[in-house]
Image (tube, rainbow, N blue to C red):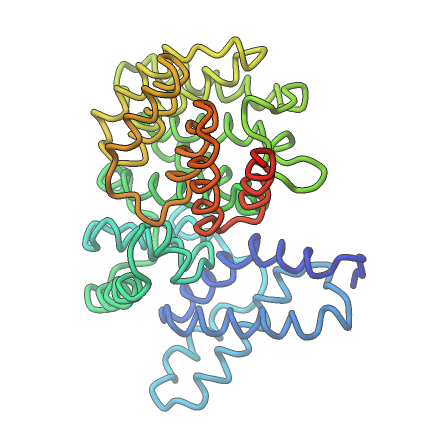
Length: 399
């Protein structure tokens, strides 16, 4: 057992790193998604109760998996219909498991099971975020900009469909991988974005992206997503100041960027662009490369970024893409041009970066009262503490 001073932070880090593995293992051996999630939740609740008092185990993931399995065994013993699942649990004792379908990682199987083409795309992504990343229904609903009740219904229907269609818990054969590509990459990118303030989850998304790119070496979008993640994650050390306040890209200390990771991301991007089949992830990685290769913020090639956002908007039309395109336009043609574009956007109600962007443009135009009002609205909508601290700081600078 270990006893670090900040056990709460360590326990939260363990949750991010181990939730998907615990759930995936229980799903594999029981075939019951709800049972797997409930027993994993019980195991983590037990950890929250015991670890602050007893210390964190040396192998927390193994401790959680065994505890969750024991919970599942107890639950199944109380159910007459649980006899077959109990036999399955007994046939898979705790500890390292032999490879199945050529892959030793249950999380990869879980991801491909969730992304089966029998499920609607939104359900594929939502179910993976729920099962693999342990995100709450409300968190997933916010990522999709839909009501929580709508997301809850999607998750229930997706699990029911997996049971009814007897979808196997396995990585599909190579000839079936392309039909899962869009959903798998979408899941990984959302997982990465959700974990951007949590290094363990971000690292897990990159690890799974490497596996996916290795599984599909002829799919340039898989490599494009890996490059995009590497280029974004390379800036992590400069993203927050010592007080936990968000540092915007133009103010970051670029000496703190991970140059080796940037070089790897650029190499992966170049190799996949050379295939001549550009897609949305490759374009987004190219935008990130424009930032990563600028020695100073003033050296950023905003005209190239604006062109790339135009390409991305044609490939992937969405209000979020248009918002970013408006920011690039403001850097090329001035804040009024950017504000005019922002004020035409629809479909971003509840998205804090819309009023935050308006606030910044209004501030640059000298319209301080309107900027303050927009900053206040952004603070109300922001979920992340780092974002709220940054917005409050900018609001205080106005007064």
